View 1 (cartoon, rainbow, N blue to C red):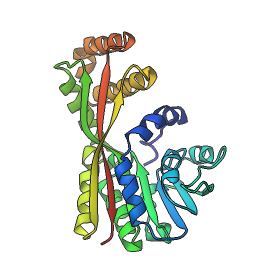
View 2 (view 1 turned 180 degrees about the horizontal axis):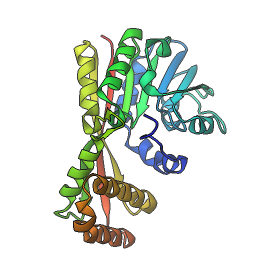
View 3 (view 1 turned 180 degrees about the vertical axis):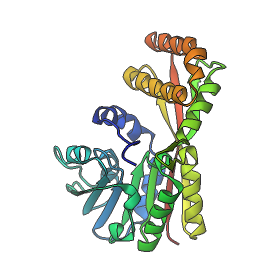
Length: 272
């Protein structure tokens, strides 16, 4: 998994404010309602530099202990830099880290968890890995809050007829096979939600979105470049046919005319 999930700390830092704005506050409040009383332990899968922890910890009661799981030791080390976030009562949370591949996650790794979280993860899992995470949560009875799973839907403004061609190629790229791993892409959240429903868990979903404008021009530009780069990798013909489209969108971005809405699904599942 690590070979396709390498992300820079710069990109994670750049997107963190928009991630925080986009996540479902309604589901976060619902998380608090399904947690046990007393100290809670939260396992964050694919934690990166800890942005989910920094966002969610202040919304939940304490005492809190967070266990950050990631395959990139450099990112988890950065999550320990500086002051830890505080719970809703103002007490600093405890933080531990575990470095390893997420496809190896099992019930023993989540034993004692009061909650499992992940952000922007499901699209880069395989069906087998998604099943393993669901099975582990069900085995230990830990609710799970999954945020920012892509739906594949993007709305750019001003509209252009070529938007749908790029969107289609990008979505196909998200379903590509890498080293024998077939990625779930935009089907990640529906599949995981369905698996929890089959386990007779309660499931709530919320439609969320990034809303990118010239108020954060670097984030908009880097997201667009990544979006069209992936589409061109999937369909090399777009490099020829889409050259004018790319230049048009870049010019619009420089003039402050470009905007994008990138839709996601947030999901909360918990035992009955």
